[in-house]
Amino acid sequence: MPTEKLSHRITLRDANLLTMIDRHPFTANQLLRVSKTFPEPFTQDRLLRRRLGQLRTARMVQDFPSATIREGGAPHYWKLTREGHHLVHGYDETLPSRRQFEAIAAGHHHHTLCLREFLTKVIVAAHAEGIRIDHFASENSVCLEAGEFRMYPDCAFQLTHPDGRTFNFVIELDNSTERLRSRMDVESIERKIRGYDAHQSQFDALDPSRYVVLFITTRSDQRLQHILDLASGLMQNPDRTVFLGVTLTEFVTTENPFRKAVIKDHRGLKRTLTPMPQSRLQHDGDDVKNTQRGSSQARPAQRTDAATVA
Image (cartoon, rainbow, N blue to C red; front, side, top):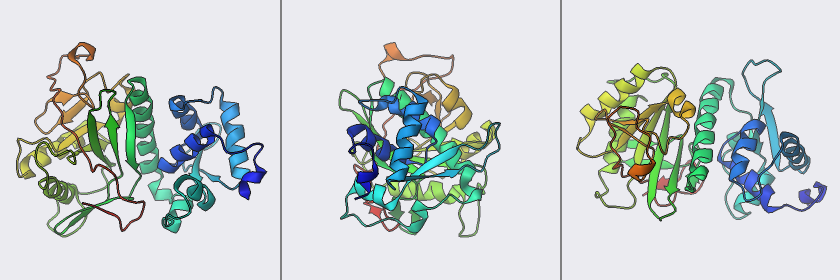
C-alpha cells in the first residue's frame, strides 16, 4: 500500500490536509494559514512542507509550479493524486475527469490564484467566528440546471453558524474576460444572471435550499457595479436577494468580512458575508443591510461534471 511509505500512518491532521487540498489547489503558504482551522494545526512552515513531501512520496499528493513571476521563484500549488482522492472520498466513488489530477492550464492560473485567495480568507475568517464550512463543492463539480441554462459555479458551500443558522453560497469569480451582454447564445454575465435567477425562482422565500450568488471581481470597482446593475435589471423579482458582489481586493484586505459590511447587493446596500448580531458589526459609514438570506443546495451533488443539483 502507498501509505507504507509514510513515516507513520495517516493521521487526522493528514486527513484534514488532504481534504483541504481536495477543495482547491492551495500553495504551502496558504495551507499553513488554513491549517489553523484543523484540530491539530501545523505550527511551522517547515513541518507542513515536510509532511507534504512525505505525502507526495506516498503518492497521495503532487505539486506543480504556478505560472507567476515572483522573487524567489514561482510558488507550487498542491493537488491530490488518484490515490489521494480515493483516500478522501472512498474507493466506491467514481473518479473525476483526468484534468482534476493534471497541472492547471497556463491560461487558467490567474483565475485559480484569485479563487484560492478568496477561499483562504473565507476559511480562516469563518473559523475565527466559530462558523463551519459544510457541503463544499469545488470548481465545476456541480451543475445547476434551469430550462435552457446550465451553470457550473466556481465553487459552492454552506456556512453554518454556532446557533445552527445556515447560509449557502454559489461563487462566481469574474476576471473581466466574459462579455457583460451578448445577443448570441454564448457565455456572458447576462446569461449567467438569467440562469441563476431562473434556478432560484424554483424556491420559496423560506426554502432551506435557497442560495445567493456571490460575484467576486478581480479587475475594478466599475466592473462589479456593472454586474450588479445588470442583475437588478434582469431579475424576475428585484425584491429578492439573489446576487451579491465584492471586489477581491476589498474582500481579502478586510480584517473580517463577517463583521465589516463589504458585500454589496443589487440595491447598492452593503452587508456582512452572513448576518451577525448588531453589537459585533463594524460600520464604515455606508448603508448596511444585515438581513441576508443565503442558501445553496443542502448538499452539493457528487464530484462529477454530469452532477445536477435539484
